[in-house]
Length: 460
Image (tube, rainbow, N blue to C red):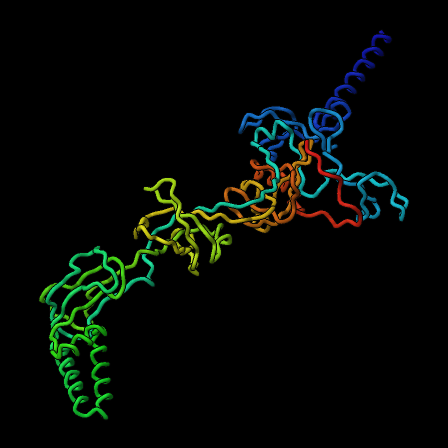
């Protein structure tokens, strides 16, 4: 009996110890293969955490463990990406491309991994697929860049001539009798009856007669009367005709002062006119203006004197050369475009006012680094591009951008030719970077080094 009691006490003690041990470890982080799990989280929504494995309630994603050593769930030591350089732990400004010893301190150099860079994040392949990460490369472009802009043909204001009479009178005959008619310089437009002109021609005839009677004093009087007729718009040939016939004229013929097309006509038979009456507007379309709408992003490429080719929709394949002669100093607030004026020859009148055309500028650019426009992330304070460092490590690299055109952006500093960059999913990468480095800007730059630059970039 006593022996059975002792066995029962020992069994109870064993069961109690087992129970207490079970309770003591129920809430502690799990150990997997010697690695300590801190918690489980949703890879799509890292802010969701759980103390046990399971399924995220909002998106149905399987929760992944987060280990104390920072590694992934595939086991083993965490991959930190490629080694950027080696540094002295006591003198971080001392760097080298190869392992070794700092001769000044005698300390062994330790590697600096891509994932150690401020703002860098490491994303598994599955998660990259979920957030839609796509890649591109930094490229070098040379040659020329094409800028296209819609344009509209307008009249060259410097080639518009307005026709007025210099005296009052009545129109008798009209020769240029419809709008759109082509006229040449010196071609008769109309005849005008003017009493004032009749008096002026009579004065001229009297001056000529006085000069014949008094040659010594007559030249001045004749010259004054002749200038009076010229003031009324008579040509030298008309004045010589009056002098030859000796008859005063109540009628005068008005001639076209320039060649072109009649744009407006206010001359009709029997119409009384004054010097303020605009009889005709003649437009010379042998040279026209083209006003093109250039986007703000392309504006730095367009300068005065830049050549362009004009394409017409109704004449496929034909190109007309034009040249920028003026850039308006204001952006259109409605279209956010800059008005650029080009001058184009138009000998066969193929370009007609109010016609829509396309202007194509070929701008030489030389050699320059470019990336797809979607690769550049605007954070408000700066512009960054995420660079793939291999093993799922992404580094936010601050860049200085230049011209933007054709879906690409020029990179003036921050990247090298051949760098593998992220072109899609970079916004989510930046959010992940901010979660990992809350006290460090995502685009922070590493401290300057004393020694050679990091080893040549290798792509994964």
